Image (cartoon, rainbow, N blue to C red):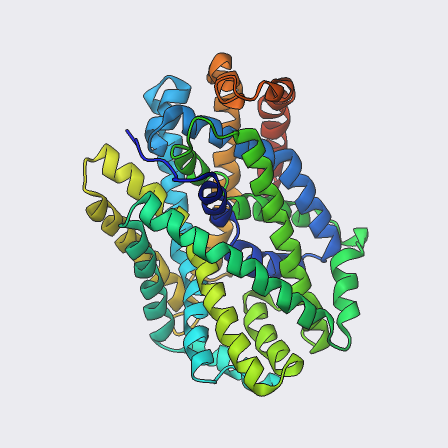
Amino acid sequence: MSQVNFGSKLGMILATAGSAVGLGNIWRFPTTAGENGGAAFILVYILFTLLLGLPGMLGEFLVGRSGGGNALHSYAKAGRNRLWGLTGVMGMFCSAIILGFYSVVAGWCLFYLFQAVCDNVLGDRAFIQSEFNALVAHPWLPAVISVAFIFFTHAIIVRGVQRGIEKASKAMMPMLFVLMLLLIIASCSLPGAMKGITFLFKPDFSKLTADVMYEAIGQSFFSLSLGTACLCTYAAYFRKEVNIFKSAVQVAGIDCGVAIMAGLMIFPAAFAVGLQPDAGPSLIFQTLPYVFQQAFPHTVAYVVSIIFFALLTLAALTSTISMHEIGTSLLSEEMRLSRRAAALVVTLFCSVIGILSALSMGPCPMGFFGDTLFGNFDSLTSNILLPFGAFVTSLLVGWRMPKDVIMEELTSGGRYPWARWAFGTFLFLVRFFVPACIAVIILSRFGAI
């Protein structure tokens, strides 16, 4: 099993946070919040992250570090039965599906980076909207750039944990935070921006419906990568002296913080330029170029647009890397493939999903239940597979995993005895509260209750 570790505590935190912080926060969170009423959705999202997401994340950390291997091995070891390993296999397929349709949006980022370099993203609203619509409707370009992005991810994965995943995360994450702060200042300084800030922070609880709550928990699980076995896989690379309780709190805090920052970056600008906050997946691509155009002289706007779309592309990479690693780790260890060969299998599978998702939104409309395949994959993973994976993990940790192992991992072998106070609360949450809440939400989603 895995004998590889992250090289430093900072690298571990940035890599793990990078699995959460990416397009899930910067693209999907504003999109989902905008479609579900803004502030009321955000409050529910934060609540779910604290009460469900944080215990779920800690549970996956416990399984991964105590298992010390790929997701199948770690889940089987934690459950003391090989059948529990199927949870890790399900997580692998879920992450591969997400990586496939996620690469479509990541490909848009890559395309916009190229267009920014060519000075083709700045202009009036009509120009920006027409350019985006032309990209989505193109007969082959979205599929090509989607696959290209998956192969960029592949190139990092084959370099391994320290030389690939950790090194890339340490370079990308700090730059992303700095640029986001600059763009928040620019966005909030636009005329009419206060409406967006109000939308973000003043809740209208009349918009708080059951569907909004479903979307909030789906976003929480999607953003934190719960139910994909990603956190379990990364935790196998944690050193034994790492305080996993503190690490889980840090990652959850960074995740929520970046989501709010993304909202401050997007919504004030959207209201300022007259865009509806429920504009959907295109929101960030139709809003930010106009922000650059309005907030800066053209030369400065040109440079900022290049930097932003470069970092947005890199932020997408931090998430796609973690999703790719799950399958690569599992296949290489369980099927005794070389890391390069295992990574190629994952890359090819995800490329098929990416191509179908990209084509379904443009030249070849296809899908089920009145939605595109892109939307189907998004709904399947966010509303079913991720909650179900988190549900099974909570049962495993709460009822099957030996208590002495849980205590050993919580305290990092006695290095952090103060973490003992969290044992009882954590066990109650993963045994009763987390699975009960997830079960109610899943059953309600299917109209069973």
